[in-house]
Length: 288
Picture 1 (cartoon, one colour):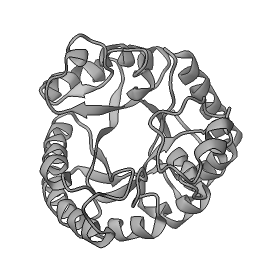
Picture 2 (tube, rainbow, N blue to C red; picture 1 turned 180 degrees about the horizontal axis):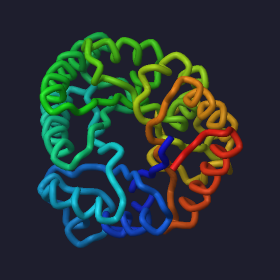
Picture 3 (cartoon, rainbow, N blue to C red; picture 1 turned 180 degrees about the vertical axis):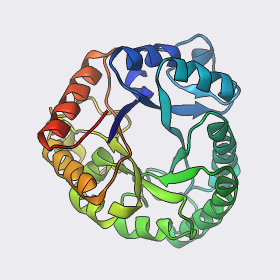
Picture 4 (cartoon, rainbow, N blue to C red; picture 1 turned 90 degrees about the vertical axis):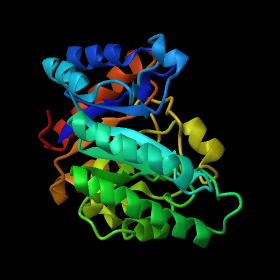
């Protein structure tokens, strides 16, 4: 398996994407995931945001990353597709992201739904709208050879029955799941059982722990965690993560494990990285 991290670890540190690349190179991490920005943001332009804008040249960025031994595992285009504005705003954003990702040498784009039941739509209406959206998205994704992942992060996607429906929206090998160990837990699901049900649809994984205080306060009442302020291994989800790592290994998964946590400018992310490497070693799972 391969270890990576999401650059949202450095949101509060106000790092640039280039500084994230330098951290990855320094710590021997060869895969990185970031959010994509569709447009211009002053905070990004000043170098205080660790994500990448779609106006940046994808080929030049790919070359700069390769020079540092780092590549994209996935790019995050997870604007919620379940609301009334999903087709209006979310779909064009994802379509642009697919073409950009292909140029950047990235073969995975992350998508999701909204955190809550969509206003102005019944559940069935929202599902029907998302089906049409994913049909458009997969049509473009197949042209570029880019996999579309659905992440459990919202009202529909953290419900395993609804997730199963969504993964059947389009009959395509390029439609898969980005498992998130923390979001499934905070939504009140059993992350291990969630992983078992969709084991052969998982093509990318977010490794996220959950602090005891957050779990006690909101578990079952939220569908996702913006950024986990808990180093992996320090929370109540660590044992589930170990069991999921073993399941993934037994199923032949050889993809990326992308760490998601608040990095605190590096120290918390480094603790998470060390824990994950140690857990993989203990389980006898080869990793880079």
